[in-house]
Amino acid sequence: MIPEPKHYPELVAGVKNLSSLNACQDYVDAVYFSLDKLSLRSRARAITTDNLSDFVNTIHNAGLKGYLAVNSVIYPKDMNVLREVMDSVKFAGVDAVICWDPAAISEAVDRELRVHISTQANVSNWKSAEVYRSLGAERVVLSRELSLDQIREIREHTDIELEVFVHGAMCQAISGRCYLSAYLLDRSANCGDCAQPCRWEWSMVSDDGSTVKVGGRYLLSAKDLCMIEHIPKLVDVGVDAFKLEGRLRDSRYTSTVSKCYSMALSSVKKGTFTKEVAQEWKQELGSVFNRGFSTGFYFGTPSREGFMHDRDMNASTTMKQAVGVVSNYYSKKSAAALNLYESSLSIGDKIIIEGNSTYLEQEVKSLVLDGSSVQTADKGEIVGLAVKGKVRKNDRVSKIVSQ
Image (cartoon, rainbow, N blue to C red; front, side, top):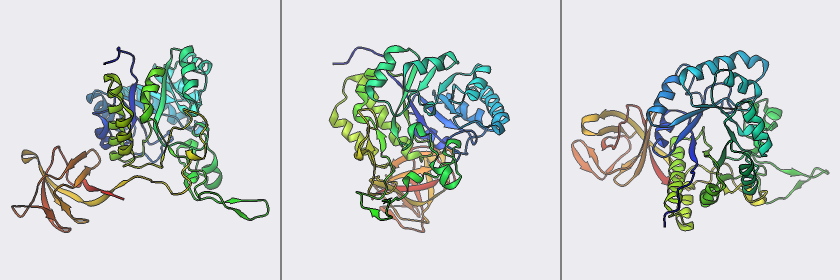
């Protein structure tokens, strides 16, 4: 039975360039991104004030909304840069600015820009949400340390738009306000330059200098948030947007995560969501970069199970293996020539072709070597491949393998 129509949340994915935008544009309603300045992802440098208008036009041409994160701490030396960024945002037609520093909020409001309050503000109650609305905000990205019941209570007391994270990396500090990287390495997480020391191996040492044996070595590494099994509950709370973290992830990650959550939302709308199919999506999510999965604070304060103590960084079940590059593209034949300078390629392989603006996933259906069809092309050969979309010279080719 199809449920009665209700308000369904917007699905918002983090992207870092045209390739990751192309990877998720068929699955999401909006994307959020950073410039090469004043964001918490300073390594995301593909989008600048010079190409911002073109990037936003591409977003809009895909039928999506585009939100720009300007969420770093604003110091006195940053004020002129902040004004320049906001002028560029206004000119480019960005749909909203994600910020929290009062200076950034003020500059955005002065230009009549829509404002979404960043999770960095740690909004944890409805009164705080209303205060930000009084400053000109129309949406608040809630603190990641809230439970489902607390979010429901906030929803009952305010009609400002509410956005919540449903998937991606979790910081060991409240709302990401971490000083560990700055203290150890003079690289400030609050200015977008976190060295992620929480992902390092650590030892616990007692007062007498002896090392305490604990169940693992990565003592501060929080598991990734994954709420794919609980999407119906989140929909019922009545939030306005689901956020997918991952502005620095590769395009395959962006594609996989966006697709899974898009299918989950669609199944809720159709009344076909089941625990069994949610497990299939969770398994697919586990095939791309992850640190293990947790439900974060949604159902209570995370226990030891909320941390990945026993292994570093990536727990994905598959990986990309470099194959080579595109040496030519033949649009009339929907084919490409691949230079296999790193690995062989066979019929049935699942591959990814990606570049600065390219993202294409497909299975190898046919290979042509010296005018003849072959089952396998070896490393060092140049082989023809039928492709299901446009690719470009020097795009990178990888195949997906188990690990």
